[in-house]
Amino acid sequence: MATLALRDLVKRYGKTEVLHGINLDVADGEFVVFVGPSGCGKSTTLRMIAGLEDITEGHVKINDAVVNNLEPKQRNIAMVFQNYAIYPHMSVRKNIGFGLRTSKLSKAEKTKRLEEVATMLGMKEYLDRKPNELSGGQRQRVAIGRALVRNPAVFLFDEPLSNLDAQLRTQMRLEIKKLHQRVGNTIIFVTHDQVEAMTLADRIVIMNDGHIQQVATPADAYHKPANEFVARFIGAPSMNMLTGSATNTGIELWNGASIAGPSEILEAGRKLTVGIRPEDLTICPPGAQPVLSGTVSVVEPLGSESLLYVDINGIEIIAAGPGRDAPLPNTSIDLRADAESFHYFDVETGQSIR
Image 1 (tube, one colour):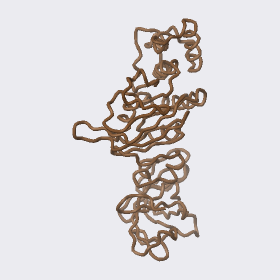
Image 2 (image 1 turned 60 degrees about the horizontal axis):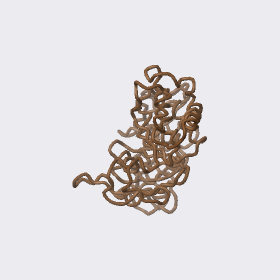
Image 3 (image 1 turned 120 degrees about the vertical axis):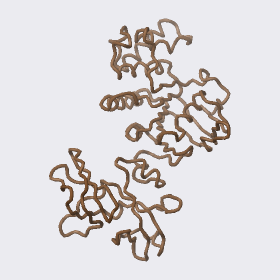
Image 4 (image 1 turned 30 degrees about the vertical axis):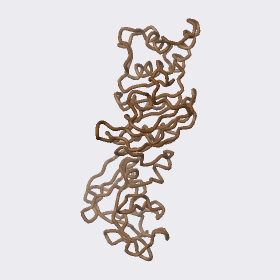
């Protein structure tokens, strides 16, 4: 196991800078997930850690040792890629054992290690099969096993579940989570899927345009986003963003409705972006004071609940409705939300005000 540190990491391709000074500390045994839109720099960062990309500026440290000038094989890391990269002509046994080909272990120790890993991954009964006799999930387990058998200091996963169908991705997420709980190795996992990030990570690193936007636990990234980008990116469906302005007594929304805002932001005339997650915006019960009122344009049934797309003065927002007996399209509804459910962002910088 190992600690990992990134210090002022910069990557340029010619005159184009794609990473702008990345700083991050990863604790021993921590599961950290890099997440962000395509082109944000997450895979480039991973490849620099692995030694597959040259570092323009800054350094990578594994266990307090700078590894910038070390070859990938000298860094004691193992990488699992999006495509399985397993050998079709080799059995599962030989594919997993390939990770030990250069080790100095005896034949008996290699066999013992291979069988331990195969048992851990539930692949022991498949050791003599060829990859074309396996399912997609089993092939991905073989790729993970080839990395795991080496017992590396750091595991690097580069979107390893992207080629799997939805049900298999859910299953593999659970297996990777259980695997980390058993072996306790340091893991860096790259994905563009926020569900993978939220379910797997001890901490999430949210990136955009070559910058780290926030490093936080999944709960904090969701409930305490550092800025408007994180608030929009984390959560499905995305957070509703409304325009408003502060008064001496509260926040006045664009539609004329008022909500009680925290005292520290009540500066008269201050322009704000007000965020509210769809699940926090619900149908107002009879007799209660609504925050917003509008007309349902689309209903998306999800089983346990429904998503309501509501038109309010030409602005579409998303609210949560019941799974049964949801309002029909073209129905007028009132919506409510608790005051503490609102998020406030500076209009110019996009940073969270609270």
